[in-house]
Length: 135
Image (cartoon, rainbow, N blue to C red):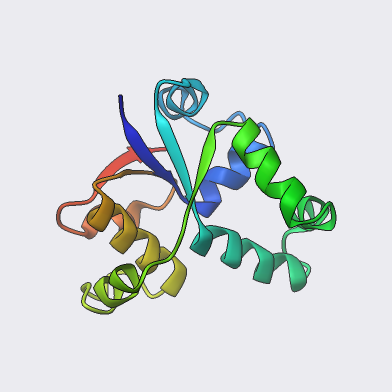
């Protein structure tokens, strides 16, 4: 069915069981017929925030070890999307709507891999060709 890329803020909200996740986004994330990717860029961004004490929830996940974290992601129907050279190069040519390099990389990944982004960030919609599912 559908192919989606979950951004870091939507991932965090989903992991915490946040009631503010829109039902449409929650349904997609819970439907095993869809392929839900989480970018290595999102994991990298969350690891940096966790190391700075800004994301204690994710610190607990990292403390279990990366193998456990990846197994947990797979168990939740998430596939890891690696960072390729094409993604990095595409991110550099995007308009400067977004200043966050991790978000720009995820936008490039979505465009390069024909993915719909599940996000809470309204700025993503400014990029031509990016399909958004509001979380």
